[in-house]
Length: 185
Image (cartoon, rainbow, N blue to C red; front, side):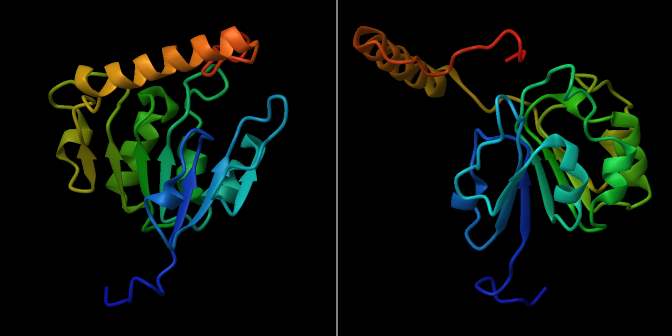
């Protein structure tokens, strides 16, 4: 493809408010699908933020769909045959969250028929992916070992979060990273 990168605009669709790909991919239009609890909050850097009921609209025309959300009963298999059919034929599905967010059988079918451009999977369902599973042999599927974080990476982040939350607790402010059992994450 001989398009100048400064003029080429891709669509990047995030399915989480926790990350902003716009900083990683300058020039890309980023849309976010976010859980409306208590309300949908615009995601920094996204050109739009929509609720899961508008997932199909966000998927249509996307060149990349990146899953970075928690697995909940509502998000389980949120990417299935219907969603894959809406995606652009050149689009790539990237899952760095949880394997069960994607209907694996539907994904295999979409990849075999070249319905989408490909998939890059750091997580799968089942996990680990058994020997002989069709995903291993598909030329348009990249599988990574789901070992992105090391103790050397996570320990400083965890220590900083704990220190910040001790400061917040002492000041009477809300803590960062609170788990909401009702939401499931």
